[in-house]
Image (cartoon, rainbow, N blue to C red; front, side):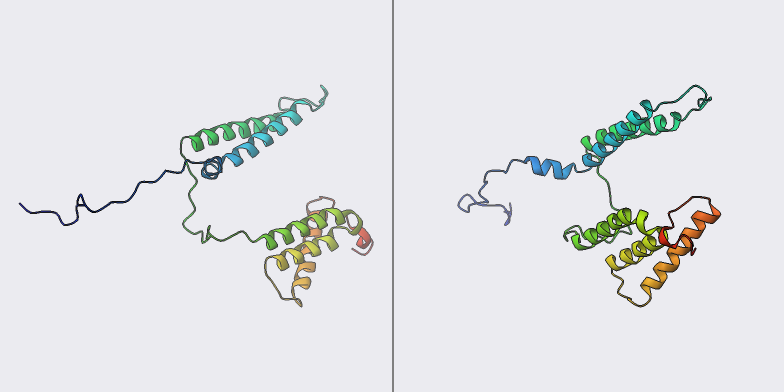
Length: 188
């Protein structure tokens, strides 16, 4: 008979079992982070349904498909998707990254970029009435490009202004969607 050299002997101590850490609440929430999306979808569905059901509609506005139909369908769909996603997550389902994603989840989030983009969007929302879309659109496009890393200070504002003017004319003239012109209303 041969002996196995890898088997532990009675005199050699093996690994000492220590206390196994109990999974905490933070660990469970981290493992089921997709439930946050479920809560968001559920809240959005309730908001859409509440808005649709409290909408005042007169009999003359109502036809076979009234103004409540689409919001009711969308709100119900949001609730169904939220429940189905929650059931899937609680049964162990996990979202998988796409093969083309090159995100390193070990790296921290780039808060500077997110804060710059949020600031640009908030400034655009505040300034669109007094300055109009052509000016605010140019600031939005240029600020977004800057926040995302473009440092071409000579050409970025020109491209942003051109994009803003083209967008203004397409929406205002071709599509008939009125956008605020601001002080440039008489010039454009």
